[in-house]
Image (cartoon, rainbow, N blue to C red; front, side, top):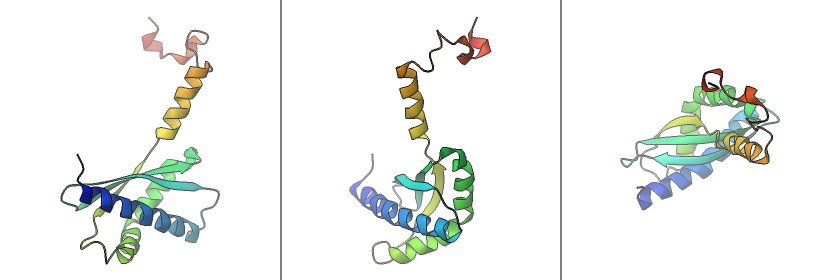
Length: 130
């Protein structure tokens, strides 16, 4: 369970990371892309933060996450400058792709009957058909 301090720091980081990442990608010339920081989890010792990013369109998500990981030190420095009066030490950032939106869309399609394995048995893995 997260403490109030962890939650406050995660909220501060989430807001500032969203702004910094948008600015970095815009400066790199990346267009037609929506990135949101969906979740930030900070460890109890406040030394590490797991940052979950939701990227639309999702086809480019892995490529964009790798690009952000490559710019991690620059992003960390910029966020540290913004939060220097609120944090003593900037946590180490680890970026992950949050594919929960894709998962929800797949579930919606299944509930609407578009991916019905009874009507289309090719949707089931071959090893599970028997």
